[in-house]
Image (cartoon, rainbow, N blue to C red):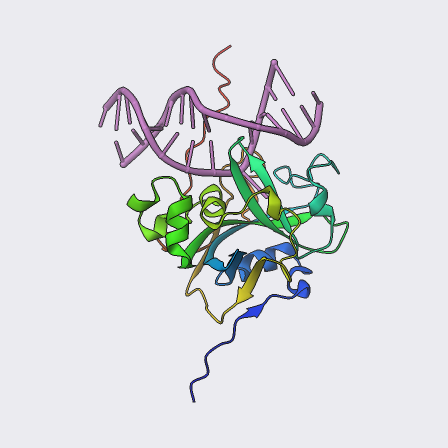
Length: 211
DNA sequence: CGTTCGATGCACT
DNA sequence: GTGCATCGAACGT
């Protein structure tokens, strides 16, 4: 008989491990959002690790604050926040309680609910499928993820991550993008050559013009 | 192709 | 008041 892999929701123990391990192993897993009677999902293609108060790019760098409280909580929960006043970014909290760390999900290959993704994305009708969930702000929009999902239990809620037995052929690793500090840490992982991976983007200089 | 820049809300100093 | 874990439009080459 055929042995179709059964979708298995990742248990809390998956996240209760070193963040770099989780970031690497989340590639190929499936982010699933159940909204109403419909399901929207995509395979994770790109992640970034943010680890501890010593990581200047991590939201825990200033120590505990109201916003970053989820990072200090138990692993396996979602940390969603508003960035640049208009984009929601979703993370999976990792490591034991009190050890602030998380994995940012940056790109997905759309699987289920593609028409819903197009509806939620601006100008979605004109987008290639590989662009629907390309970039951390785009994928939350496509999946309907917002502050409502902050602190959602990724092991048991409407927002989960599943293992459907898919694997990424080749994984690349390099510097995190979109940040100005901590770029020396090569904590970004992505599916090599996949069209839906978000590319490094030129950043505005700090302009220390002549003085 | 490349780079620049505005939008837009809020946490934190 | 400053600075974002971004995006996409606009412009220059």
